[in-house]
Length: 96
Image (cartoon, rainbow, N blue to C red; front, side, top):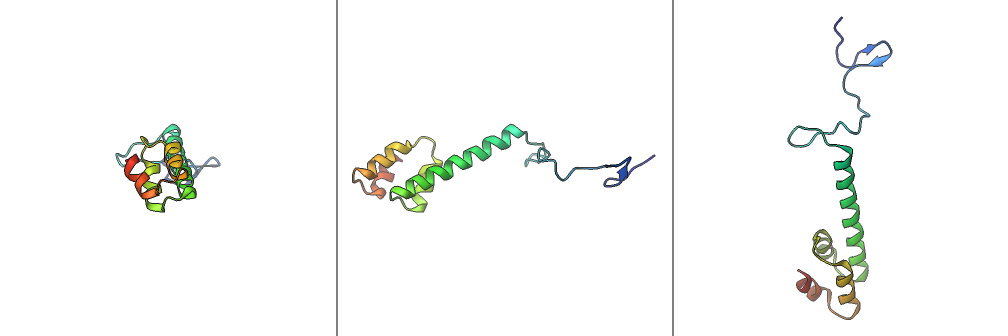
């Protein structure tokens, strides 16, 4: 018996499950694991938090985003520089 994708077979739907979150594809055509998805999401969340903290102390959005995405930039050092009176533009030049 041949079953077409999307047809029911004994109460179950055959074919790809649209609710399967793990069945995502990368550019290479392979599937992404849950760990890959978690790491990417966590990285984005940390960068967003770092950006918000830098904006809070006086960096403009563009410079805050650049500093937040750079893993070699110490967030606490950036904040300390501005809180001690260093202009944010100069702090960016020092940190990068």
